[in-house]
Image 1 (cartoon, rainbow, N blue to C red):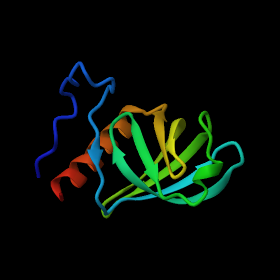
Image 2: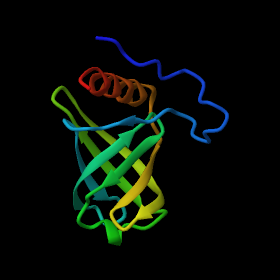
Image 3: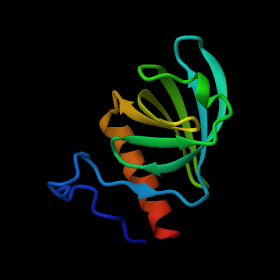
Image 4: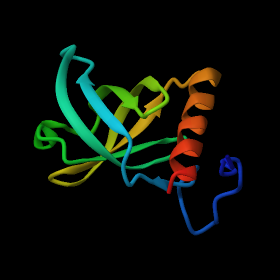
Length: 122
């Protein structure tokens, strides 16, 4: 399996710190509102990077606001990652961006491995 080099420099025209990897399938995303400590549903990750994830098709999406703290459970065929994130933008009524917060080195490596698995299956 080849793993994409996630440490490569991002082109200067892109303000993102990490490259995005588009998700076509095989990744489930369960979301919890951290302040309410309750599930708000299953969404679809549209793309993922070491910095965060873009979420789409979450039925509760109109209720999610910039600044909301979320618990994220990313599940693929090989692993499940429990991560924390903050909503940083709301692109459309059914799409919003979440920045990962407080990733440990172990979490970061697990995200890299998940991206590598997704990228290898495309």
